[in-house]
Image (cartoon, rainbow over all chains, first blue to last red; front, side):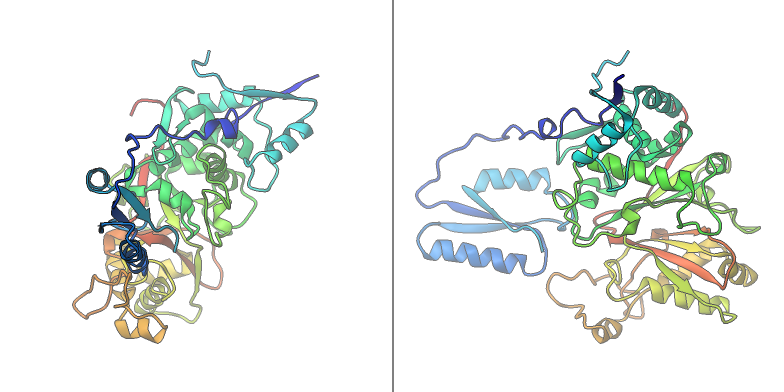
Length: 97
Length: 353
């Protein structure tokens, strides 16, 4: 005799789906502008700017700017996301501690 | 008839079903009760909401939690159907944006969901509020909190080592629901102090670090108690210490008596604890913390130049626990109030109200 149960989700792997991209990919320009996402954790901005400076110094990137989150525990605001999309050709984000 | 298909699976036996759930990341490591359809439906019915109703959307993960999923996890956790309204109220609170659920479930800080249930329904379902309030042995306390954790894991993808990045976590992540005991004469209940009626039942949640037990067995004065609780709240390694976060302060009977005898009520206690839990720059430095270092959050000071650990409105005072040598417990939030806040929701018994 079969023993039937309800599953909390259909299939875990099937439930995890990549979200539809909000923006269309575009080719990187010869000298891209880098958007840095500072998550406010200790030394995050130092490390990110170090990466950006090196990318500019080696001739890969044109310049960079930084978007600073309100705190590491909060997601980015829609305004900040819009600014990134408008100004940046590529983004470097720091995660973790 | 359900509009949304509820996935089912068939096994040769209950043991096989339990083992199959172990094969998925849907268990906290302990065996789960097999969520048989009849019991899940009875649980949904007891919650008073449609099974296909949405409890919340975790937009960062693009995941929706439905009532039937919460009920399935409640059954898996071992809940009686009568516990389900409390489970639902907890989820209602968790999906409040002020709680910041995605971060609570993700952070390396390893937050649990601590919950105080205040009101007559807690007694009706035999929740424990007295002796051993955080100890094993009470089905309601144990399984309501567990239902939340299993739902977070199975549905919201808070899998340990994956999207739940806890560096340590703590035992409260298995379950951390408890009931408020009857407050002393002259004190309003927690729910009344939060603007609800005496006959309501509420669930107040906190994204919590592990609890810190406080002993004072040597005939303290009220000021001694306020100083000691404040000192416990401002332990230098705490995430909220000097950085303004939320706290549950759970007073045991002896300590409550000392405070009552001094004529203090919960509001006075909250105000005083806001002062005694503030920490000086010197105390932080003595513990090896430089308050002006980059990335720190020590910036809101009182008139003494001490950093607030909590404002009065951030401190929820409740009575619980049993008689003994003289114990109370502080439960601190795992992060500052700029990131996550305590949230309270009423227990409802229908979809309206």
